[in-house]
Structures are given as C-alpha cells and as structure tokens.
Length: 254
Ligand SMILES: [Zn+2]
Image 1 (tube, rainbow, N blue to C red):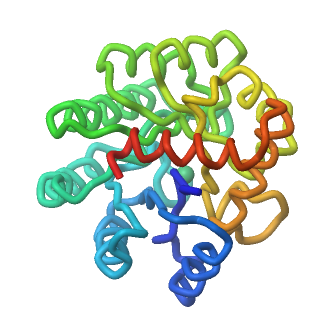
Image 2: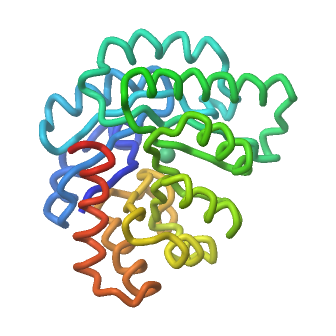
C-alpha cells in the first residue's frame, strides 16, 4: 500500500518517527507521500526523505490554515517559494495546498482572497515544474474545483468534503480522491468510495489526524481504508490494494 497523504514531519512524531515508519512498513505500507503544512516543516520532510530513500517521498507547499488556526498569508508563500525551487527535482508533488473556508475560522473576504492567491501561485509552480498537487479543500469545493480545472494538473483531493455532484465533477476532471481512516465510518466516505472509479481512488492516513479513534493516527491504519473500499465496492481487498498502489505510482511517478 502507499500512503498518499501523511504528516510525518508533524511534532507528534518528533520522538519516534523512525519506529512509526518501521511499524507501518511491517503492516504493508510500502511508500509514504509526506506533506508539510507550515513552512518550517518543509526541510524536515526533505530530511526524512533523505534518510528513508525509496520509502518517504517529499512534498512541499503551504496549507491554507497555518499555525494557531490562522488563515495563510502571503509571507508563508514567500518563505516556501525558494524551497520549492531548491528541491523541485526531489518532489513527488506540491502540497499540502488548497482552500479552507470553514465557517469556524470566520474568514474575512480579504483572507479568502489571499488563500485563493496563495493556492494559485502554488498551482502555477506545479505547472511550471510539471508536478502533481496534493490538495486540501474544506467547505470550498466550488472554488477549489473551478480553480483546479483551469490549471489541468494531475491532482489528489484528500478527504474531499464535496457533494455528490462535486465528486462527479472532480472525477470528470481526472482528479484522484483518497479515503482516510476517519472516512471509513462516515457517509461522506461511503459516497466517495462508491462514486469514484477504482482507477482514481487512493489511500491516505492524514496521520497524525483523521484516525478512526481519538489520539495519534499512523500510516499503518490505511489497511482499514482498503478494507472499507473493498466492502463498499464489493471487490476483494487485495485488488483494492493493488489498484490503489498502481494509481499512486502513476500519479506521483514513484
Ligand atoms: Zn493533511
């Protein structure tokens, strides 16, 4: 299996990231696409990929929500831009990038506009570097899809919260959709797993977040995502594992 979206550079893995990777490899996770959220995690992701060559594949990008739940600012993009140029040849994708317009953040129109601008600038670089994008979209499906479609980039929409209609648009655009452990117990997960053709489905842990239970999630949990897709689609689990692995290799050129 390949975990297409995990945050092994997160502080909660600081003490034991190597054991976590070991455990996950033992559990059948062959490769990890590690995505940072904040500029100060980018070098950590690169370090990890150097230490775990052939296992950890790095991504760089700025998440729409930064530390202390603050909406992204242009300065975050300015910090990440030189790193994107410096490491472009090493990257599996650009991410985690995207839009998060969740009402709980009470974003101003200006903050929303900056999120969109930062998203577009990173999509622009992905186009220039010929890299796929690892995308976060929360309460923002319409904007995310319309912006993404204008760049026609290979993409992964992780833990996508769009409606049935929006899932169809994403599929039609050729986007890949990934199922996280938390989605295996939700209506949204069922919708994603049933509507998305197997050729566009991927597995993700989003660890340390989006586990099935409270507490730290680990990449080894993606076996539950494969079993869940198997149940929803009525296709044997080993076939789900084979297909999602092939999809990930194709999308990220692994
Ligand atoms: Zn994430």
